[in-house]
Figure 1 (cartoon, rainbow, N blue to C red):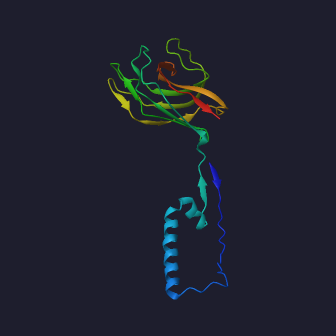
Figure 2 (cartoon, helix red, strand yellow):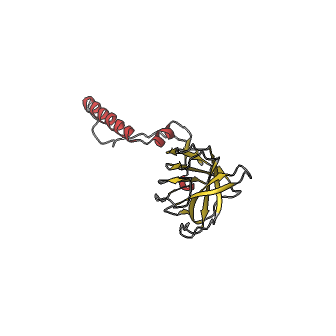
Figure 3 (cartoon, rainbow, N blue to C red):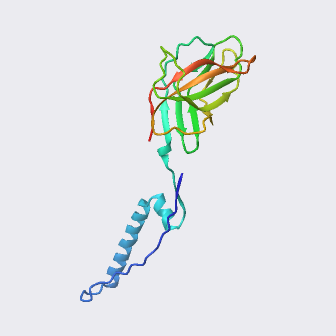
Length: 207
């Protein structure tokens, strides 16, 4: 986030008429003053929030949005043999300044006959699109979020998942293809086993 401090310096301006011009009559002066007041009101109404803050000597905070990247997943499902899996379209917002990825909009379904174990969403960024016909778990994990178990036949829809940054670095300049991996914890070894993948329809270009 960039912080910009603007300090207003007020300068007085005096307007002098030509010495040879005839002075205005009192009624004319009133008319001129009234017209000026109306004009000042119109100008004030058009002032931006930044201009008003500038005149008041306030600090103005300018948000740099170039570090925020958004992508939307494919709607169709992976077709993996699964009990717990993704449904619908998911939206990804990645803020490199905050080192944060937020996932929203999609659905997690448990089509099994028993409750799932603990679940984990892992966001990968790869150098090529994820191929459902020839799945390769390529790229690097940049964000992780743990999800509570889902009861048999139940689903979680339209939720927002604020993930934890899972990398020591941020993506450098380049083009990245995100996908989300859904893992389910194996109670015997505590490891998360792959249950589903949600590829994204568009890439993210980090500049």
